[in-house]
Length: 108
Image 1 (cartoon, one colour):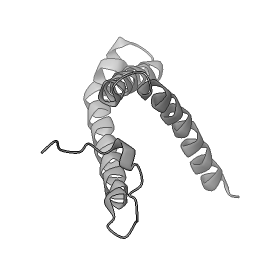
Image 2 (tube, rainbow, N blue to C red; image 1 turned 30 degrees about the vertical axis):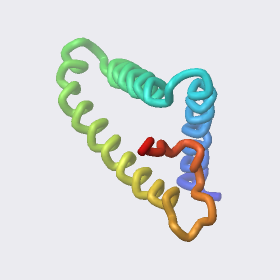
Image 3 (tube, helix red, strand yellow; image 1 turned 60 degrees about the vertical axis):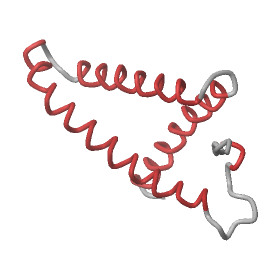
C-alpha cells in the first residue's frame, strides 16, 4: 500500500468514527439536530486548524477569507459526491431500498 492509499484509508476510518458517533446520537435525538451539531463542530474545529497554523493575529486574519473559500468548496464537493451516492438508496431494482426505515413517508 502506498502512502496515498494509506492516507485515504486513515481518512475514511477517521470519518467513519464520527459517523458512528453521529448515528449513536441519532438514536436519542432527531438526525437533523445531530447534523447541525456536526456542522457546528466542523466549523469550530476548522477554525482551530486555521488558527493553529497562524503565527500571529495578523497572519490568522489574512487567512480567514481563503479558509472560508476552501472549506466551502470542499464541503460542497463532498456533499455532492455523497448525495450522488445516496441516489442508490432509492433504487427501484432493490426489493427493499437500503435505509428504507429512515425514509420519511407522506401521510396521505
